[in-house]
Image (tube, rainbow, N blue to C red; front, top):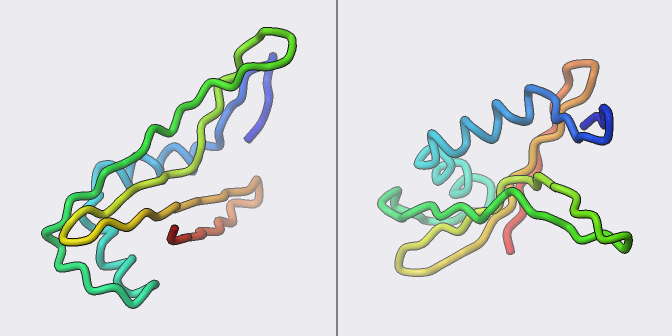
Amino acid sequence: MKIINSKVVNPPYDDVFRTLLNDCSRLIIPVINEAFHECFSGDEKVVFSPEIHFLNQQDGEEVKRITDSSFTIVGKNKKKFLYECQSTADSSMLVRIFDA
């Protein structure tokens, strides 16, 4: 993430990763099954939480914050996850997955 003229600019990898996750959401279920030893069938619904938030500052200004991908897999049970992709200027990428 860079700040240019008071605007937050995400590296292109972050936007591509977020788009890929949203457009191919059914592919996240096998990854979750493998990473967390879950048994989702693949018929569950993946529900994404809002990624854009506005934070009120003490001076009255609002700051737009884009967060990582937070989603819930809804089936017989409901379970929340956070999927984060961090890219750097050297083109390396770190992916983190958390369950809630």
